[in-house]
Length: 124
Image (tube, rainbow, N blue to C red; front, side, top):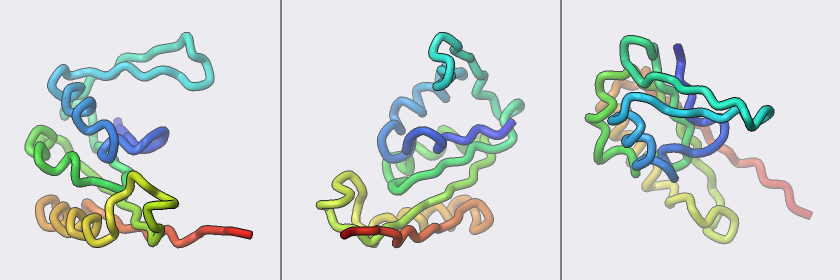
């Protein structure tokens, strides 16, 4: 099973403590966004999960406890943007994100991280 954490929100950037709590507990509940009464439980076990994919603009909050997920294969998809705080107030400066990217690349291996630049901004 592949666990993609980035389809609905930025887990590393905003919910890293929650995610690590889920890892400690060994399961997570997921609500179906199209059928709100359907809630599924998934075991968070490295024997069942082939890879955890993280999609984020801010990996730093997860870095200090990264050893908690060492037993899982990981793939980090990190997006950087050139926008100022007026546009993206909750995203750290590009240099900070690049520093985190470099750290993850060195710690996990370059095959485990991808950098995506997001320059698209249309304004009239």
